[in-house]
Length: 302
Image 1 (cartoon, rainbow, N blue to C red):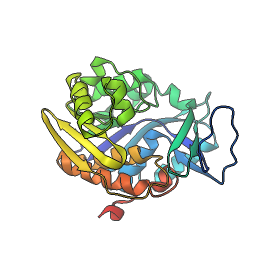
Image 2 (image 1 turned 90 degrees about the horizontal axis):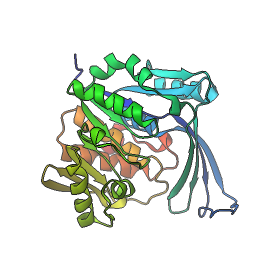
Image 3 (image 1 turned 45 degrees about the vertical axis):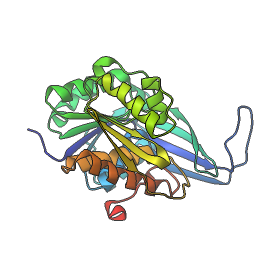
Image 4 (image 1 turned 30 degrees about the horizontal axis):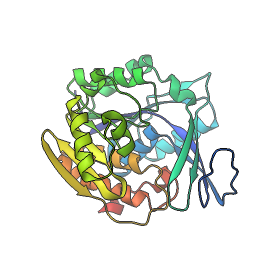
């Protein structure tokens, strides 16, 4: 039986090691940074925390190593009110780690060692089948194996459960997966890869969205950073302007957006209102350093 509010998020759990510097290094260059932070991260975990802080009923399906980073992450998810019953432990691989450089303008460069995230398998998803089949919607990203994403999407769509995919990091998607998606949420880079269209503003975003929607996803929500987001629902387009802010660190802005979007939809909001809430949450997140440390609470956007 479907729980009308339950959000199942399937994805990665990492520990982020962040250095802030005036600018990002070029290959072969060493730069002296000024601030170091170590935070829990990973696109899946960030989205789960964002959804929980927005008031969502969240189950997180993931895989960590049997190590300190993995254990610390699970403790943190507990404190956020996230169900961790389906976070599996890999005895042979370490938990995922991301090395993040952030410049003075808030732009970042990220290098990820997947570790246990790379071994989250269809067999693990099968162990969580009942949880997926009782969800209102399933939200996924691409820091776990593609066959695992495809398997989870198949389980969900067979039960009529909505699947949202944040196609990050950018990679090629099968037509079968695209046709199982209720919503796809690419940023400019990901939209360009999926559509072959260079995205430079609202009009080119419309062109790219049309190409992507013709491949199968019911709705395209194309995020445009400081501009906001473009929604394509069938043959209709809606612009949602971003809240103007001074960006400090864009890490996890897209994840905050996706988590907030999923909560809005689980509460029965229409797509435009859900995207408005998501844009507001993402705008707040870029004003703070770090991944999960920058994610706002529902009270912050009201």
